[in-house]
Length: 255
Image (tube, rainbow, N blue to C red; front, side):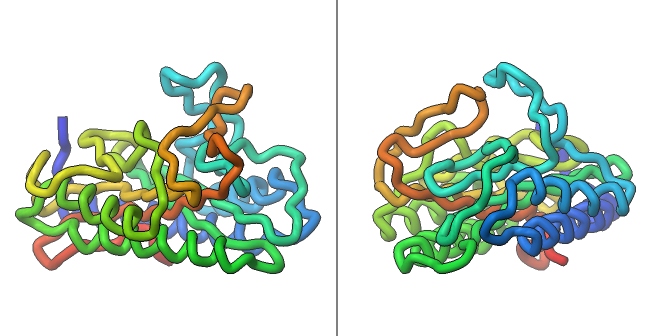
């Protein structure tokens, strides 16, 4: 069932979104050559604790997962697309890092992700991140009253195809609010004019995940969580929680 949020709920979600934005900023600030991924998790965790927020990631166990997720961020590096577990891996010069984070505050949830380069960037990685950002921007622009879910999906998929990038077919965005994952499901590719009609108060986590290889297939690590490209090509993931409003799309996970 799709829950349409009141304006009061949207304001509460905006506060949760600010916490997410601060946590992502802290994780990014901690990222440097030689730093362990778990140190990025610790930086984000500190922000959540200070804000009195709960992590919807920590302990989360969907049906596909063999174990509960052990951290407050997903940290996916280079060929890891999403759901990377932040452990003792040290960052190296030129790594492409995607950080996904959520926060639950006063019963409402925010979810967002960023991708960036540690140290010296490769031009191809910068282009991949730029295309992912462009896909997100296109999806957000389509999140307007009267459009349908398929319009957002089509906007994202068009940018990905134009950039000769692929996206994992089984993963996409989702509704969000009292819980991190709510209806409706939001595919990252689809046909315009199809699906749930967008209304004022609908809140969505829009999250393109682009793979540079142009191949849609992926593999899962033995940890049961980390998704990787099958050929070792790099991936990027950028996400915002967005509210559909009568005044246009409103991004809830900005600082």
